Amino acid sequence: MNKIIPILPCPSLKDQISFYEKLGFTLAYISPRPHSYAVLRLGSLELHFYGSKKTVPSENPQMCYVQVDEVDLVYEQFTSSIKMALGKIPRTGVPRISKMKHLKEDRRFMMTDMGGNTLFIGTPNEDLHESPAFFRNLASEEHAHSFGILYDLMYSKEDVSSASAMLQKFFPSDLTSMEVEELDLAKLLLVAMDIQLHQHQAADPRLGDKLDELIAAHGTDSADWNRISRQRSILDEK
Image 1 (cartoon, rainbow, N blue to C red):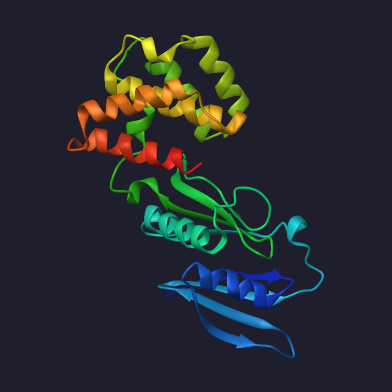
Image 2 (image 1 turned 180 degrees about the vertical axis):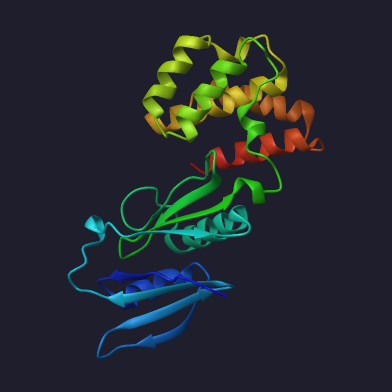
C-alpha cells in the first residue's frame, strides 16, 4: 500500500505528545536526539512530528487533510476528550477544534494542535451513510432555490456575512411563523441559528424553542427527524 505521511513541526515535542495523547493517540516512536522526532497513532491514523524551536504556533501555516471513515465518531471522541482535559471545547486560539462543517465535497472539522498545525479531518460525502443533500434541500418550491444558495454560501463558501444577508432578503424576519412543511422549517431554523451563532456567538432563543418544539412533536423514530435532532445537538455544542 502506498502512503504519504507529512512530517509536521512543533516547538515542544513534549506538549505535542501530551495533547495528542489526551485525544486518544498512543506514542509509537520517539527520538529526542540528534533531532527530536515522534510518531503518534490512533487506529490506522499515524502522525509524525519534529521539534522546531523556530516554529511559532500562532503563525504556523502547515496544514494536512486527514480522511477518515467515520468523521462523526472522530469528532465526538476528540471534542469529548479535549473538553474533559481542558473543561471546554476551545474554538479560538491554540489549540482549537472547529464545529462540524457540511460541505459539498465532504463532512469535516478542523483542528489546530499545540504546534499550530491545522488538520482538516473529514469523510467524503459518497462514503457517508446519509447524504448532506438532506439538509440542503427543501420540499417547498417557493423557497427551495433560495435556500440551496443560502446553504452553499454558509457551508461550501463559508461566507457567513453573505449567507446572513441572503437570509434577511429572501426569508421573513420571523422564521417561526413561516407556512412551510415542518421538516423544511426545521432545516431553515438550523441554518438561521448557525448563522447567528457565527455572527453573535448566540442564537435567538425563539428559534431554538421552535425547533425544540418541532423535534418534541415528531420524536426521533423517523430517520429525518433523528438527523434534525442530531444537528440540533451539534449546535448546542457551539
